[in-house]
Image (cartoon, rainbow, N blue to C red; front, side, top):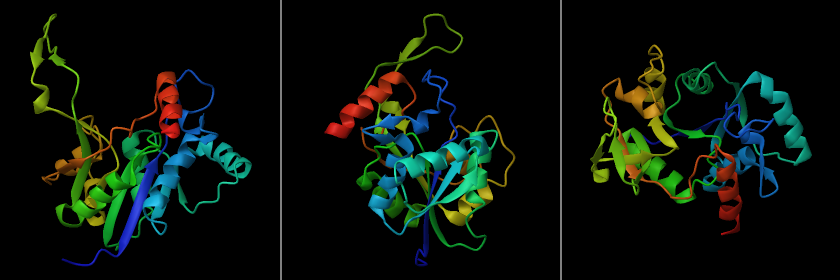
Length: 228
């Protein structure tokens, strides 16, 4: 197999924080004394200090982010890309920052998942060297009920399902080709975009702490996780 020459991480942070009920977007809310997004970027550099990080932020939030970086003396290296009208467009903008002829792998990660472990990141990258498309997953622990058109629904086997996390890691040329497709409501994550090309997606184990911070309750959980 060809030697992987480039490794990137695209961190997508376009949320408006509506479910949080806060005046500022959730990726900027402080956890453990600094904004969520700074924790997230630091996790990827903890995995590999030479990893090329691309941060995708809406233009309207970039000035505020720069103020936060100055305030918290945050000087980790990254490139900045403009967020789009949808997550698909934001990811596409981030991917476009990677050179056309780049050979290697890229992780795409939610900016509000600051507790992804280095082990999870490593598993995704290592597996993607041969698998080309990798997602971290966890077993479902709750009982699931399928509703469909029924009022009462029916129970389904939770062993048939997994919860999906990020980072999702892909061969660079594969993901570039995938994002040349037209946007579709069927695209629920980056893996679903590459699957449209017929690419098989490989699952690896995620980590339970890798929560997505979207509600005030999640913020309280995040404070506890930082103390572990």
